[in-house]
Length: 260
Image (cartoon, rainbow, N blue to C red; front, side):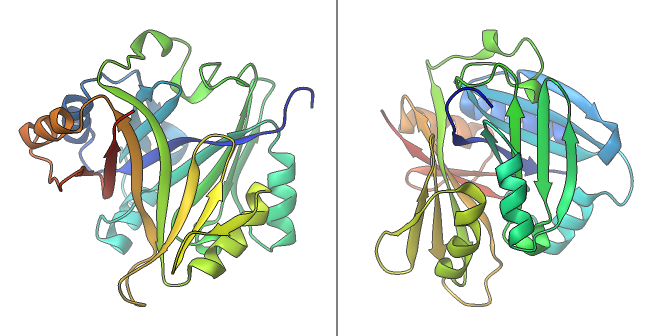
């Protein structure tokens, strides 16, 4: 394909049984309204999306019985992110790398405007990985089909900026990074004991050893840039979300806050 080659952190997806409650809490905390809602009838789900300066947080909830979200929440006890979504210039190399590693495709769709590749989470571990290509989406503020055609007016950096990274909690960071690195076509680098980074063209993935070898492997944390950590934590508390010194918890994920 024409244009630069890239793979970027673009979106994370949280799972909930109550879309409205999760949406209201996140909207208040981020001081942003949702930019897009839709019915995902093929999966028996509905969703709500927040536009964070070209990156996105999505919440999905079931509209039918016995969906993948039900199974995910039952299996994890609600801890961990449901999906990590990355955009790229071409999903074919990502699929070829998955095939070479013996990782099955969970779902694939190719259209003139957007391509989508989801990998089997039992094979990748931790969370479902999705790679997308969006026609006209070379720039982070370019086209992003999953958010519809009118998400740009919802972008505001007055309070909340972009997703910067995710952290995968895993018993074996080296093994997990070694599997994921070829999928992204990026090298993995040690970052101290039991911690490995995978740097992308926007954002990065950190593989961190859990406190115990039996701890559930998961998408545990996401780093988010905000104008004021204190203000964001106050808003999270007003929304009845648990908080730490520089983080809040929502949808099974800990959101680490940084300031510009």
